[in-house]
Image (tube, rainbow, N blue to C red; front, side, top):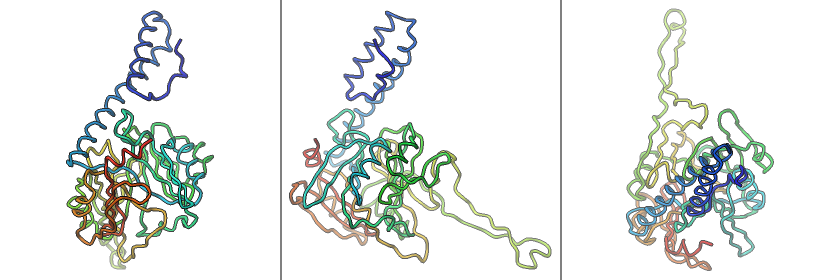
Length: 359
């Protein structure tokens, strides 16, 4: 007999279909059982979700291996206490530990909302690579012009209690959440349903037009959305107030959405593939007359490709600087690493070698 305890995401499409078929059969035998109606709806939805995800991983794998596309695969961030960080991302944010590395006295843990591999029907998920380093300085990046501004996640169920218990500091909780993860990384969480809950990574850049051109031309991303810059005008008041220099100030402030974080004025969102299915990159213009300050939490962003050397060469323009091309010592994965014109480290990772790293 089926029960609501079965309401867990399926691990495979065949398992989901078999479970759904069993529920339908039992419903036909016992049409008065109302529990089966809810279970049937849940697993029918799960089957459709996995069918879409299977199509996504197959098409994305084909695009990357053929050289027609790339995929933003994971971000590397430094944490002071890896156990606290893992607790936050798993128990608080609902991710799972996918794989681990250790060496040279450091631990590295990959967390994601599902398998990273593109060979699994539930795969193709963006990951956070958490690297333990006592040198991490909490919130050192947060001053204007800092590196990684925030990570935005959309989930179906926000668990505020679990977030607090896992070490999150809640900064804002009206309609959506703004959180400080252990170690200082800013996370924005909203209610929403996506193929992969990790929605976007936000970075500040010195020259928004030049940065967008670089991400389009050198990296091959496409613009998804542009938020108009903040423009304010002043209209002199009439009468004695106007004579005294008083004026009304009007600004084209961004549209307010009560259940989602506002997009900063002048920012541009880009991605590979379909925006709704992949992690987006949000470029935010740096405030004028504010110098760029490097932080210690963000390390690098990994992008899957079928040719690391060619990808690095194509991206070596507009002030970018290639730092390394070859096999990573001790791991063997072929990469092409560079600093983009805003000094963000980007690493092109060979797709076939990436798959060899998967559990």
